[in-house]
Image (cartoon, rainbow, N blue to C red; front, side, top):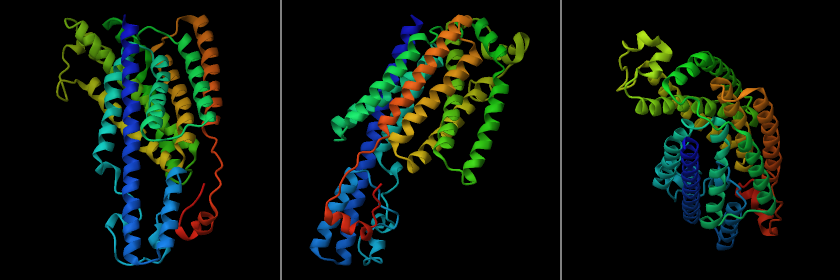
Length: 388
């Protein structure tokens, strides 16, 4: 029964996350259209012929369809300022900040609601080896909604890539451990005490600091961004698993001592523990702080990566790396595999699944070559557009 509850929570949470991501994409598209309209007004205020404006308008339309982004100088700067007309957003050369859009904020709220009330709840019943691969549901929901409501075209290569990735996820789910890390307080205490989770978190934090320092020094590669975001995501998974498992056991076994306090203070010390933040004692408060910090860190580096790399290049690699890191850390910390035979079976299927995910991601990363009309080719350098 617990497996079914966890599975339903993960599926529902990822559906909400996928819908939230699509809403954010809609908001960003609307901000870009608003900025393009303001830029056209600024150009009209600065003068110029109708034929030139027509070419610029067509260039904007083509750039939107091809996901070509204008450089920060924009059209007005390429013309040497172009007069004093237009709004501040148009003169600054970029859309207004995304957080000023209510739709974008609502999409972000949906993302975190899906994580907290979907995936985090699922982690209290299921292994991370089950919950992490189910993130493909959010990707598929986002894909379907974007095609249906945002007019995005999905190529046959991309469809094949998603099919291969889904097959890889299926390989992992077939042999993933299906039992919870703890079904009673005693198991929870044993799992936490035996895992050495404090030491593991310390090592991960040290690695993160080193990787972030490399990025700050200019080593800004896709691999580093993916690895940092995946490690933050893994920390979030582990902290969420601890908190939600503790909460589930606390509600089920209300009469016994706090299992989180027993794990860290011992049976006698647990009776003396007092809340340090609202109703949370030190272990839960530390886990909550780690979860909040990991969410901020993951989102920060994920957004930085998306600003530098196309989403179809970043997302599949991030999905595969996150699955590897989160699954392995969950299995090692909570010892969820049932003996050597199950371990060999799981890791063989896991390796095959990750290989399929990476193979499928190659089809998502293939950009279609598009031939621009001659009048766009002639003017694109003067317009400040960069075709990739």
